[in-house]
Image (tube, rainbow, N blue to C red; front, side, top):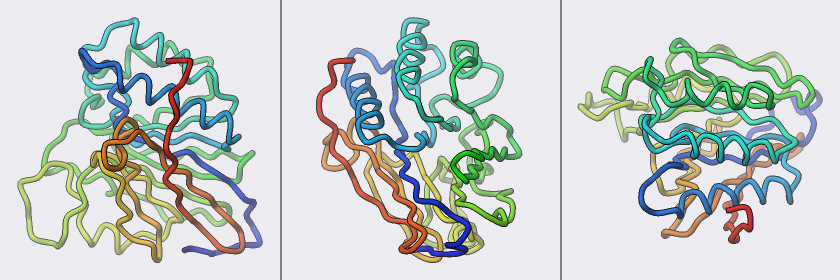
Length: 247
């Protein structure tokens, strides 16, 4: 739990998901789960949706998938903030370049700087930071460059990578070492890349993988609802997804 600066904050509820893998072939399970996630965001009236990478399964997904994904996001009345993952990484060939014109009229922010980008959702009292992945390799550290926490409001950092058990150098790509987590003072760190929901830390910052939208826990579709309360801090609830007519 975190409860820093409670007098400067309002209650919020975010929907956190990742590894949606839209465009997977031949299965349509991913699209059904993503549509159900959008249904849930609408039903619950969440304040924002955050996607911690891999909205798309690869950079060659067809235009029909891009149109469908944009239509799903257009159903939301709340803002969406997202980063690239290893499947839709953000070099020149990224599918997100083709996707961006389709969402330019929507309240969707893609944090696409390789050095890291901060967006302030002033109406929510929420700051979100994340950086784009140029390539999935051992030298890319998803949380490097995270700035000091804002002076007021809630703050969320997005990262797409693999949390390592210790500081032993690894050949694994996009590692997140304990030193990266030890340096955090943001309220919530929304991780992607691991398909199973996992809570990594609860203090001083809450750090968690949402799990893949279509298989967040034991193979069942689910997303993570993140509640920010001025009194009790940050709490998490894994929410199963019901089939969606929009799929």
